Length: 431
Image (tube, rainbow, N blue to C red; front, side):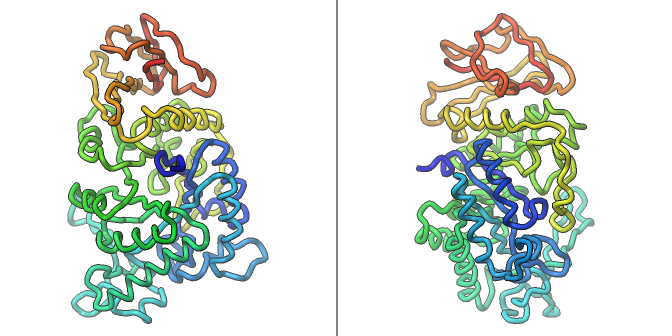
């Protein structure tokens, strides 16, 4: 099995920032050089009136913003040479699969009116979200029309439309699918599409975007056949119990962590431009679970949030730093050491110092293989701890300063006292 299927290291090429598809190659080459094995692209299609990437108007046409200069042909085939070049870089191309809504001005609304949710007056419904902290606050996406994948009277043809879309993506050269708001789509439809895709390409991968859904919804997605899920470790403060509880609850479901995404603020903005935090959160995402993802620009400390309507190539920023060597070193560690692959079993040790987070990570396949994952949660000050305070160590242990793995790739002998730099990540495991 290719590494991309059991250790997914995903680089998100955000197409509004990257621009025309013939310019994607340089970004793919950079991602491959950092050791990523997937290149994920957000929706590629002609959008509706709002211009949002996720308000798809025509599924058989490419977004004009992604056409090579001088090209008038908007057919999806324009992407084929780009996807071939991406694959030649050693990256598996992945695309966003959006099945729960279309643009309100999509031709499908008039061509297939039975495919959409309707209110009591027969009007097409817009998707909405209710603020869990204040149910009176309701966000309605007026540029979107909600698909009725579950109860449409023309469900057979609707599902076949989605099946043909998946066929088309695979035929173009995509090998994986990031499934937007997967929990809003019936599990039976996902089963149908996953089985269909794997008849064409047995290695096709489906990644569920399941953030914010219930435990029951996540389990249902697992039963539908998804290969990967999202975890919420980005929001963990390294103290509260919820994150490790979730990790244990879904231990059998391979998950992907991320220090930021196209839906979140940039970490470099949140941290005030703290490179140590940028290194910490990348290392933590890599060592916490099965896979990881970053959006383009993370390696350079970009601070401007990605926007599905407003971002353009002119928003490319001057690098605040260059973490390519660091990311390459961490990705190499994850790919080369089986202990850091899969979900593992994580237990947090109780520490006297409140700024120290120590996780014991054991392999699910080999419980005798384990390590300590140690983080200084103080982003401004060093933390000094006697080695005995960490508790039992693995046999014949060595220490790796993961936050500076690009500068110090080899193991260090175990000292009597460890000084953690601000936000530093250190692992202790058998040499």
